[in-house]
Length: 113
Length: 413
Image (cartoon, rainbow over all chains, first blue to last red; front, side):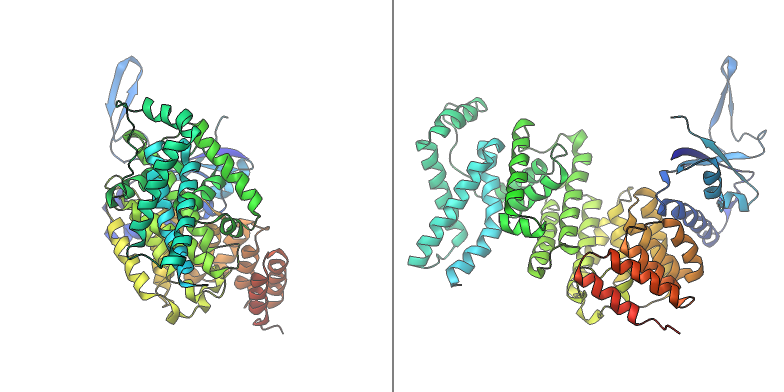
């Protein structure tokens, strides 16, 4: 078994302005998906969620720019580490990620170790 | 059994751990065996004396006085004490004369017990030994009772306890509260041992119902003891107590310790203990502060929802959400199976079956029971083979009987 990082990207995080009931439905989608991976004992660590529209970027020469990183079409929203036999299985597990439903993507990257 | 004997048995369970804690605090944990001997000897004297003169008006106070005398006598007489204990006690004290008077005030008893809990639930000791030692020292269980609880013999338990006590000495574990920066982690360890103690009783390997209940009650008592101190009366402590109350409320309703998961549906709710459910809700309320959501919070909430008999999709959606969260922070096979069962109740057998087949817990008989339940309407013949797998893997007669009962209810064409 190997560890893979799943990086969730979305173009927009407008859902944070949605009414409460719709947000709750979204939370449920994420939990159902992650719970399904965790139920197989394949979730290595609970997900880390990033606060959209905040933070900074440090570039060579000490150049610091503030978010919200408009030049990047899909912003990183969070990440989690899962355990799978190989990249194919990790990709299978990534299916069903709610980020994809809203036009985002999941990047699947093997973790060195 | 005569009246004196019965009284002494009850007192032993109540007072043994208190007295050992007070004596060990006074003279150091390395003398825990001497403390056990003194207390054991005190109870022998009580048995002899009470058989002759009757039970004193305040038996506990009587025991304390006799324990004090015996401690003092041993202190004056024993060469071990002169050569080993005295220098050690003196070294730790400024004064010339060590304090030999034992303080059996309610406050000191409680303080000493709390310190003993932290000393025994120390990560330096292997977990199985910790539970054995906790049963002996914190709960006053006899060696034969501990052996019965672990389905093993007295010799094995004695060896295990010996090794654990040796560890107390070699690791130089003291009867004190951990320093503040370690308190959180150490409290987690204490709570985990109490949780294991409770589970040892609730999902017991022994068929002895009284022993099962005793284990659960003792775990609850230790949990309650922690609520008396601000440093240990944390939200997750309350959550654990709530969890234990909700589980214990169903004690009478279970046909056997094997009845979990799928068999929930069959329980007679009239046998549920309403008072314990009420207590559980009280502690669940107390647990709802702070920022950390422990696995005990989630498990307590799930257990609470199971105390509501109505079978609505909303209830199962909430249970599903709790199991999802629980699995994300803390995987266990039983949580994975229960999550899938909740998924079935909330979203139907087809969706749940796809998820269930991914679990691949093929060595676990509950896994096959779950698959049986999920296929019983769509494919009864297949369900029958799943139940057969469950039957072959089940370990106890009660479990096998339960599986047969479920299997008989299949509508095979």
